[in-house]
Image 1 (cartoon, rainbow, N blue to C red):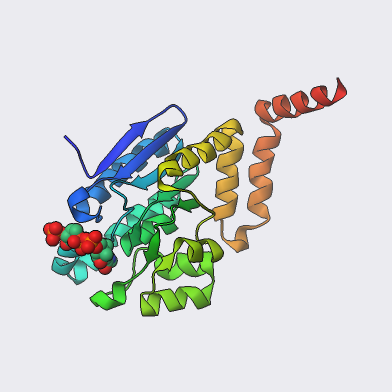
Image 2: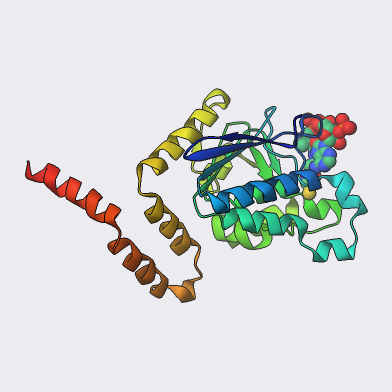
Length: 245
Ligand code: COA
């Protein structure tokens, strides 16, 4: 039976499609549980993750029908934020490939990714204050990091949705592709990642994600491990021998 998350497994990547076609892929508790199950697997067997939507939509937010019933104690459990932090912390890169609406919690899921690409139909933003809540699943701290304080404040206070062009200009996405090429473009990025050394990729992600105060100590420690890896010697020797020929 179809769940709220369709998962396609490959050796070096997993494609997970949000799939609640009747609800514009709104993220409900079952979706969050499916994302946790996916994280269990990707923490155990690290692979690149491509997050996408189905039916021409990424996700039209957290599920408002569920949100309306939630009370203070639910907010304190940080239900969506906890899943999105886990996704952000996955060992290998996470790509969000977005078509159509990426709103509210849907946008916050995309902010948790390392790379974001979209179609010209993207409409991304955080309308939460219009619903009487705040965007508590990452937007208040990730969005300013990605697009800068000024635009993040405008988006969060006014609920303005960015078009794909605006998102590209703001650095919120790195490329725009026609809808029928979106997944192909995501796989092309995953192919490039897969051609590189997996441990070097994982360590790059850890260094990228580390707080400023940990640099450059953490870079040195991660590099120390890579400098001793057989794969580093193999890849560098291959380069040098090719050059010597
Ligand atoms: N939560 C729960 N249900 C949602 C939803 C959400 N975030 N977004 C859409 N849906 C549901 C609608 O209630 C509707 O359900 P119904 O058919 O049972 O009535 C169905 O999905 C289709 O939505 P509809 O509004 O008819 O589609 P549309 O194409 O006209 O508009 C949107 C699409 C995304 C503009 C519109 O659905 C919308 O504004 N959604 C809410 C966006 C939002 O505020 N998100 C932030 C939440 S934190």
